[in-house]
Image (cartoon, rainbow, N blue to C red; front, side, top):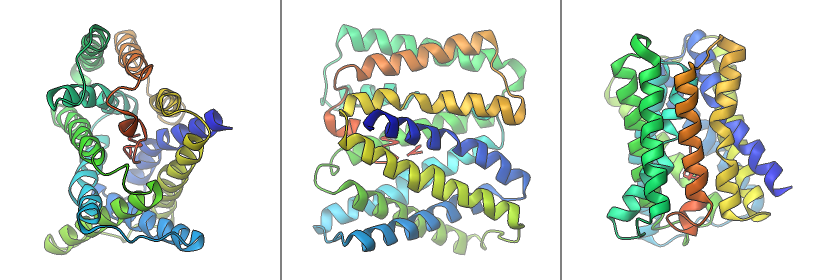
Length: 304
């Protein structure tokens, strides 16, 4: 059941961009989407913690880092991701975001946590070429602002994962996820107060898609991943998470008629293949493989 649960998790995460597109069609703004998503997810995960009678007592530093990961890292990453989603196809966005395993490896090498082997160097070069093909294949249809936001989301998620790697061994995954969600909700709620609030006057359809994002693509996705991780290896779980952009691309084709050009398809295959190669052996460490989410670090898949 471990691999099956990991695939279920990847599918739930992969559906998030599709739910987001439907939410936009129902009149939901990106600011309202991320705020409601994290608030609902934090509340639901809090209920799960209470039902399991799991303590959230942590050392002050670990607590501060966990909340800060959500308030600064995940909130920023999600805001960039869903803002980019307004400006580009979900399939292209998912492939750009999925460069984060490559970026995490680069960051780990620069921080001295890992060595740059020939295998990793080959994977990095292939992923870079693949990303360029994904972007170039869109031609004039790709809006620069959306592309920059997508790259920004991947970079922010990379920093988030590298910081999460310093506490993930000291905090139970469910507790860490709840604190990250609460931190993100608090940060986005504070931003809403300062900027005059967010519009929540959309109809029932908008709330339905927001509930899908919070429940299916956040809470269920995270719980399924952690349950699958207990039943399989971290590397296997990370490799299976590459199913996420495949789900996004397939659902985008069915729901919106999106399609990748042959050049983009080749680029996407290079990106995903590189991610698999990096995961064949522990990439940054077993800790990073555990994904705190995103859209979590695992989504370190939280989707991501």
